[in-house]
Amino acid sequence: MAGRRKRSETEKRLVLGRQRLDALFPVGPAKASLPGDYAEALKAIKRRIQKERLQVVLSSNAAMVRLYWDIGRMILDRQKRAGWGAKVIDRLAADLHEAFPDMKGFSPRNLKYMRAFAEAHTDPEVVQQVVAQLPWGHNVRLLESVKDPGGFRAMDPPGFL
Image (cartoon, rainbow, N blue to C red; front, top):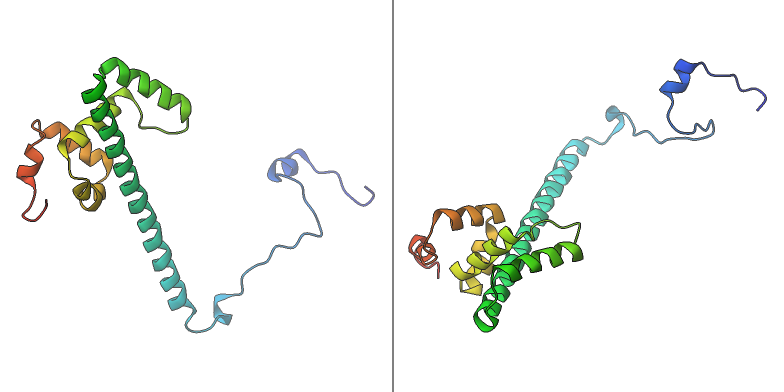
């Protein structure tokens, strides 16, 4: 402790965490000392990172839409076979929320959207290749704006199905 001076209150407020006098933090070299093609390489790496980040987002969105479609199919099947009603969907929402408290999207309302989504899109191939490319919110908006589930097929471009 000898050799250390006492800090004023102002100095104490400016310093967060422990300080070590022997700690060294590496600093990148000055830009002037870098190879001439460094800027171009940096640009290419940044483009690649941005591209891959976008791919991750699109892939996870597609996986979520396919999951929601699968859940909707399961609900439809159970309703047809076992006569599930709204109370079962409410209970299912509560149980899923309890099982996955950190996830959103399993409200009774969203489970009903999943059911309507699966009812509107009966072909898994179409869901896999086309519909899953849309974010879930866009699919919900389409469900709300097109009252007739068969109306989706009327909107499909040629070769869609």
